[in-house]
Amino acid sequence: MCGIVGYVGGKLASDIILDGLEKLEYRGYDSAGIAVQTENKIDIRKKVGRLQNLSESIQEKGIEGNLAIGHTRWATHGAPSDENSHPHYNSDMTIAVVHNGIIENYMELKKELLDKGYTFNSETDTEVIPKLLDLYEEEDFFKTIQKVLKMVRGSYALGILNVKYPDTIFCARKDSPLIVGKGEKENFIASDVPALLKYTNKVYYLENGELGIIKEDSVEFFDLDGNSVEKELHEIKWTMEQATKGGYSHFMLKEIFEQPKSIEDTLKRRISDKKEILFDDINLDIEKVKDIYIVACGTAYNAGLQGKFALQKIAKIKSDVDIASEFRYSDPFVDENSLVILVSQSGETLDTLAALRDSKAKGARTLAITNVIGSSIAREADDVIYTWAGPEIAVASTKAYTTQVTVFYMLALYFAKKKACIEEKEYNRILDNLLAVPKQVEQILAKDNEIMKMAEKMIDCQHGFFLGRGLDYSVAQEASLKMKEVSYMHTEAFASGELKHGTIALIEQDIPVLAITTQESLFEKSVSNIREVKARGAFVISITQEKNADLVKQVSDEVILIPDIDDLIAGITCVVPLQLMAYHVSTLRGLDVDKPRNLAKSVTVE
Ligand code: AGP
Image (cartoon, rainbow, N blue to C red):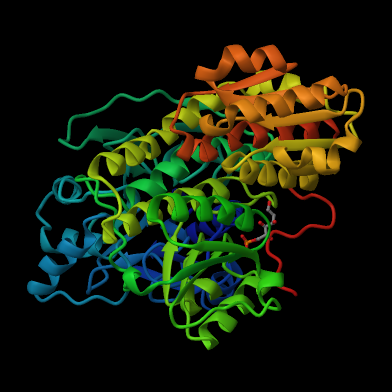
């Protein structure tokens, strides 16, 4: 996520801004910049790369001034570069803007500006804002801001300077967080508490559709029509450590709880009001694709397992999934009629990148599903679909996984429509179930305490099993990886039907077995598998939809119920309690859940 910091007061503004941006580094970024109101102009510096690059530029040539706005950019439109960094400004640099969010209608706004002779320095959506403020500037600049924001669709947290108002920061918020910090003869704006906690713990939280006029000795709030808004001043009780995690104890927990929003963001960026799936930028003739290979590592590979299920079931395309480090040496039948989909949260996993290069060398069309704009895999693939999970800081991948799976379902529906192999009714049924996922994940997260209590029963277990059939088996593999990598418990995922071919020999008294049973068509068999392990002393925790509660409760020691959802889509929601289970076992064991031993967030070595 981008980070915003603003300051007005008696101190050297650039020091405060750099310090605040440093406290927001955890949000992930690829460039940084600052705009300082000096005597009679706005001085702007911006640098791609680490914040250090910006600091060095300011150390070389300082910027006087005690009013400034600063920004760390997490690229959404346009790769990381100096030009694409914020702040953005109008041509005579009398207006500067920093922005967190997405201007969804920026193309039409940009066209209007280009038609009026405006030029642009960047590829960003944000740059339309200072140009619009310039175009519509009137005597009362605050009215100009209100007018322009009514033209904008999308999300924004904004810090705005205008050289005609040398003592003022204007700010506004819609969907992207923004707070105002109240100090002694100094005031602040920021995306998040850590940026200003060193200076004040008194903050106002801007609500959607609210604007602020911030001076060193006053803060005023208004709605989009200019009506004054009274706001409550909050006192923050967090430590700095807690603040960077938004009040959660760990990044992994924060990111698990961000999933309703990350899934919703991933959905809404690519689904029109008329329920069309907007993947036309993937210039690919699906009719020419004879087979699909999904290639990834770790959790991304597990997302690919669900992807295969979706592509075959919905789009009726022969698909396969392979671990990148195996794919490269398995001499796959990849040719110009193959589509190779590379899945990678970081976009930098070397095995996956190498598989991409091998596939291109064989003439295949390559499509990346990644979370990092401008990453190596995003840049080298023929096409890319971004997940909108925001930075994933915890080593254990959670929100990236569910957004990757969400993309696969949208892709499967898109291809099915292109191939005319899906009935309108079926298409709408699946899409409606997909659109219901964010709300259902919210409902599941509300069971966190219940799940923690079950985790308490597993603290001393050294071994465990995750069972499932069909789609449930794919989820079992991801759940097993989560538990292994954060709790260090030795677990294995098993196709329930495979138990009797060997693994059942390992089932002994009180060994935990997590049984995933969401697939109606396999329900009877899954239940009999639970009976098999129960009969041999296992402690069974089952995950299933509410509609199956009665029967599953009869055969399990504990049951975690998820809201009823189409079996096809159940793989996205039923993983959430298992993510929480892994998280709690790890923390109950006193382990470093965000940075598990021996693991890195991105494996850029073979
Ligand atoms: C997932 O929890 C692990 N951290 C790891 O398996 C990860 O999924 C794998 O290394 C792939 O990373 P990528 O998605 O960035 O390519």
